[in-house]
Length: 349
View (tube, rainbow, N blue to C red):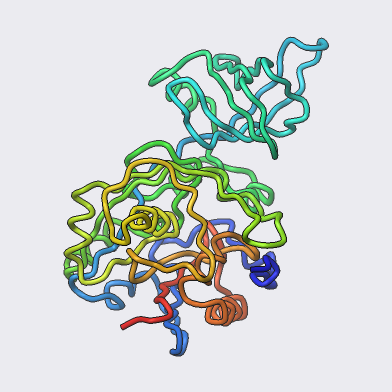
């Protein structure tokens, strides 16, 4: 499909720079193809679902993966280099995006922060992607990144205000437990311990999967046709215990596109949900046949993004165009810190 088919007008003022307080006070648009749109809040979620339904959360934890440093030892200059880690390769190596990448060559040494963390440029790829080999590894490297880095806020937030200490908690789900993401699974940011308890009291289950969200989620689609776009891979895991829980569920509701993409990756080869551990670069566009998910809770995405393509595949392009037009007109807040939606597929009960 033409990428232009997924374009729409989004006024800058509709992009949220801070989350709603409290988290569950954010708005929630109920979208059922063929039915009228309905405005709710996140707090109404227990009443919009049924006992026996299971919400699937991504329990990845965002690390402070944005690093500022300088290149050392060439031509007597030390240009500033910004790095965004996006995929761990092993105990000492990470794939990352560098800016400006044109100032880097293979074997260059980069020193980050106050100088306690250094990395050698091992390889240089396309679109600013590099491979870094750090001078320390394992838990020592993790601690150094935590001390030196900052939270990797999306560029459309970071470009409008300075990051502050509040973002360390705002840009993390309350159930985050497994470090490795460089972007938050943002639909999960709306949940509080109190809301999770009300869902449990209603008989609605919770299941957890892990997908370490990479910085590729922020990359624009530069191709003119969706068949020409290449997704960056991300590591994920669906355990056998989670598979058993979901097979016994009345309905499976993915909380966020990351949970949905991982579940559909786990079901892609056999046609039914199965345990999964490894990398996925699944790219979901209209025409995709969903096998693992009955409904999707997700925030509002940017024009021509892979995520707007995904929701259009799930609920239909015309349905989502109408939903987004309503959201823009009525002041819904978009993207990471914004409001959310509960989507049902083209065929639903």
